[in-house]
Length: 149
Image (tube, rainbow, N blue to C red; front, top):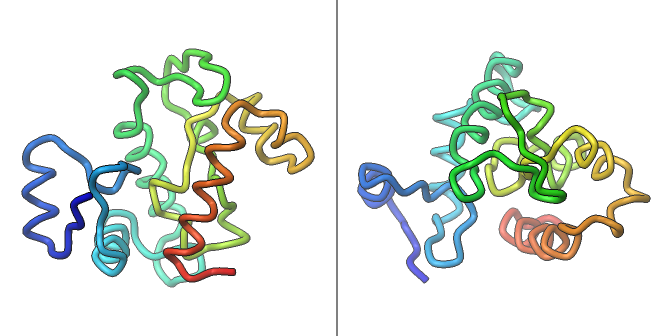
């Protein structure tokens, strides 16, 4: 695994069409660099000062543009095709209200259709979802990185 530790390394990857902010098993960003870039792109998390709504909108649009499955927008749970952008399709794995520090981390989102987004939001239904095991492991990784119990 490659760990990017400075802005020049990050820019090198981005200039070549690769996006290190997205979950990737081969490349990771040093945590402080990740937070710095996320704040630069989207603003501070929902507990910070600034225009939170605009920051959230920039984040959702960025996720829509960069998180694709085989070049298309499909629900990561049921594979339904999503034809046009909606912030409703961007679902946080760990909710913004539970962990606002992760609100603008692109690894902390799934692209879901509205039905699957609703299922994920209802904690009772999560275990029935195809993506549950993957997201459970992801939550452990994110909490460890952000030092959350």
